[in-house]
Amino acid sequence: MAALDGKELILGVTGSIAAYKAVYLLRELTGLGARVTVCLTEHAREFVGPLTFRTLSGRPVLSNLFDPQSPDAVEHVALAERAHAVVVAPATANLLAKAAHGIADDFLTTVLLAARGQVLIAPAMDGGMWDHAAVRANVALLRERGVTVLEPEAGALASGLSGKGRLPDVEAIVEALLGVLTPQRDLAGERILVTAGPTREPIDPVRYISNRSSGKMGYGIARAALRRGADVTLVSGPTALTPPAGAVFVPVQTAEEMREAVLQHAPGASIVIKAAAVADWRPKHAANTKIKTKQDLTIELTPNPDILAEVAARRTGAFIVGFAAETNEVAANAKAKLKAKGIDVLVVNDVSQAGIGFDADDNEVLLLDRWGGEHGLPRMSKAAVADAILSHLLAVRAAVRGDRIKR
Ligand code: CTP
Image (cartoon, rainbow, N blue to C red; front, side, top):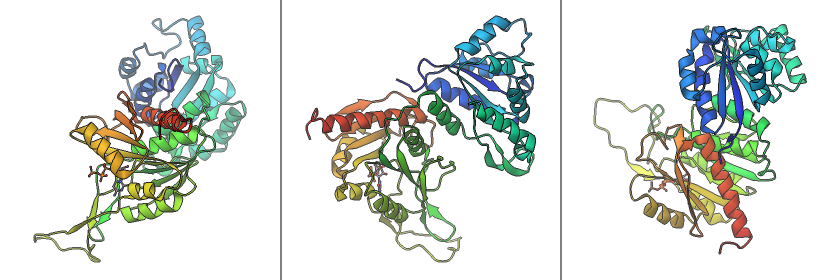
């Protein structure tokens, strides 16, 4: 079952340059099983047209209160009352002000007044607006009333300025929504060590060997585990992702550094999940100075230590989970790998398929366990796969502990 199955949501979009990101958010929410009605302000329509939202949500887009094609006043109040949550992303300073003061002069602000479910607001604004006393006061008022207002992220802004005002990542918005809607705490008390991303193996001070891993799968697992109550340590190679709030974050570059971090944090972990794509080889001798070009170059490579096999061999008592990327004879190769590495569960990606696995937003995996169990998951977003993997791990571990499957 997907995390948002059966949930009725309203996604409000306001007139910010970040409005296009609401398209990705909508895709993620529907991918998690939610039924979503999109509500655009007049200004939002200037940035992204309703057709995109209508196509992706499969529902009419609401915008003008007095539009004869929109449901009448009674119906929109009913819609707001029915919704489990109203999510506004991106929300401008203007929307925050109206929401804080109960102004209902368009469809979205009227929905916010009528809403009975959770309200989650993800602001995006320019310059120093977020720090303005008026905005601070409006945010404080909304939070006092139980509205979840996310912190914008710091970084480059559309105006060319830099500051705190960027819309939080789609993944962070989804996690926050899942947190308020489905406060599942089945991982409370667990200490989960997750590795993610690629490693970089230096050739010289400016060049390296790496791979196409984005880190999305491992970060998704870390976020889901945090939401479900676990203490999470995330050991990550270089990625473009924002570390999940609440995790102990250990950034590394090379496989050697990842090995050290993993061996340091593995004792004490109840579950170790190695989603990282560790570079299999590293240059035997990295040059101390930049190698000159215009000539052939031979780089001698040496294998990196197999961190996963090493952690498994140490028998720290943790439930050990590895990932495998396979292109051919997927099941047979994966079974051999599960055995060779001496781990409990192997999550297998068929990376020969387009649109899933490496550097993609979706994934479709097969879970093999050392007791002979095989469990396929359908193609879904990496956030949804992360939740399903964690649920499956708990089920397998409980079955082993309860002697329902033979050790
Ligand atoms: N792994 C690791 N250390 C390495 C290589 C891989 O810990 N030096 C872990 C990865 O984090 C992943 C799992 O091993 O959980 C599977 O990696 P895979 O892509 O199958 O690579 P290999 O084990 O090297 O196997 P292959 O020969 O098929 O590449």
